[in-house]
Length: 319
Image (tube, one colour):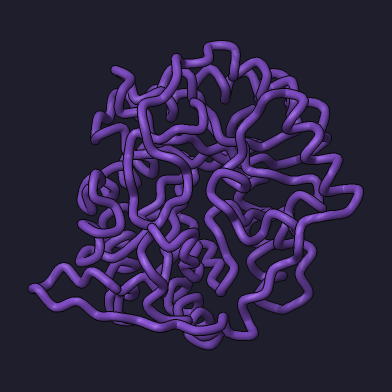
């Protein structure tokens, strides 16, 4: 069923097989195993594993992964997310050092780091975030750092600790439209996330956010949240991808959005003023320039060139 948050009606769905355009590379191969070994040897967590990302085979085979800090247990219970919910273990103060050490051995030019929400901590984990960014910059001077953070319960002082560490890209995901927030992100707030994105932009960092489609929203609502993001937060980068139900205990897939519809949203986003829009069935928030540069389509090349320009400008700005 789908919670529509407008009255008592419940819609029962039978989605059947995934459409042909929902295809992901199965995990395996020497490069995949090398990435897995590096992660396991340093006791790291990744959202690729914890969140059951469909792109894990493709990305790990390229030697890229999205590192997840602050443990593997989230204090929130979002209806779409496969990261486990509960009471986190004691904060691992050595984690920033291990992350920096592991990344220094990869030779990557760009890394994505995210975290669970830690509402149990006074600062929401902001100090660990800042230390991680500083140590990665110190250990990997040629690597740009993209960070995906929560909303810190709206505490902009905590957010500022992360901003002051100057990651090259600072992301915070809207995830869904206003109407679906109570079901999809029950402990988050639509307007709060817009304020987080606005602060990131105001502080001169490259800002980024992500949306899911197929979780109960309507096409016009996607366009509305895109416009809200531009009007209220002036965000630089937007990604849009198909929602995939991780388990039967999560919100069901409401519809399979066609590649053509994703293309329309990409064009609409560019016309609204986003610098980069990556929109497609298997797109996830961690897609970045180094991945996109290997694509052959005109849209992929355009995205890669725009992302590369953004990363170059932030590297120069941080020198």
